[in-house]
Image 1 (cartoon, rainbow, N blue to C red):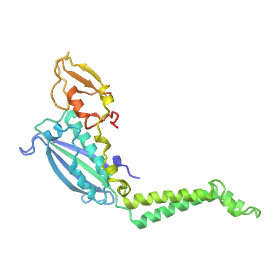
Image 2: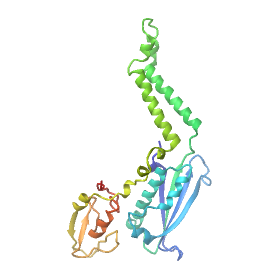
Image 3: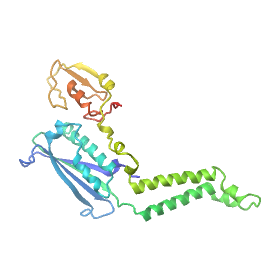
Image 4: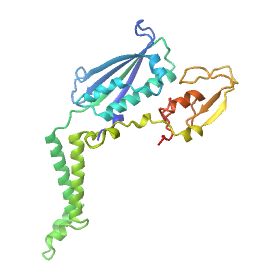
Length: 285
């Protein structure tokens, strides 16, 4: 089984001397890497390119969903899970570059590269052959036990009923029933896809846990303080990008990140995670 984190990679480039039309923009390049092709000049192809103003991303920080990438779900090798993972991680990587790299300024051009590493889709024949081999191996372990020699020695004893001996251990009917159920579940995953969209209602398939509001109780319980700047440096709310003002209330999340009280209250009406590190508060039920 392939996990999205192993098959989606990111890179970025900051251009400090961009063309005037590229200044202050975020350019996104999505590519598919075909692992079965060994020639590096042929195995990777860019399938989607788009650009947005950096201000649009910052104005919707943490709520920007990168819907431009949804069209990649039509690609034969990409599932909803992979694309959705790419969308969420694109936000995290973009925010890391803008706020923490120390290499970004508003007049730069930021290029974000997202690469999906893929293998050729398994054919129906390959799938059935793999299942046949696996089932034969499991049958061998079930009937013979870990030691096939012991089984063959037992067969030499004439008074032992072979059928009883073959089914020592777990009940044979239970074993075959559990294998049948497992095979049906795997068939559904193979024929219907990883998302199993044919087996869930539209309401269930469209729920995105990442965009649920935070629990009101959890938000009300957050630590708050009156901001006092005791140094020459200025602290900034990374939602509105304004400096904290003396005497105003600042909210501290459990992860340690701080935000304007008004900004973070509005944020948690549509999300339940920290805008910077994705630390999750309980969801509103």
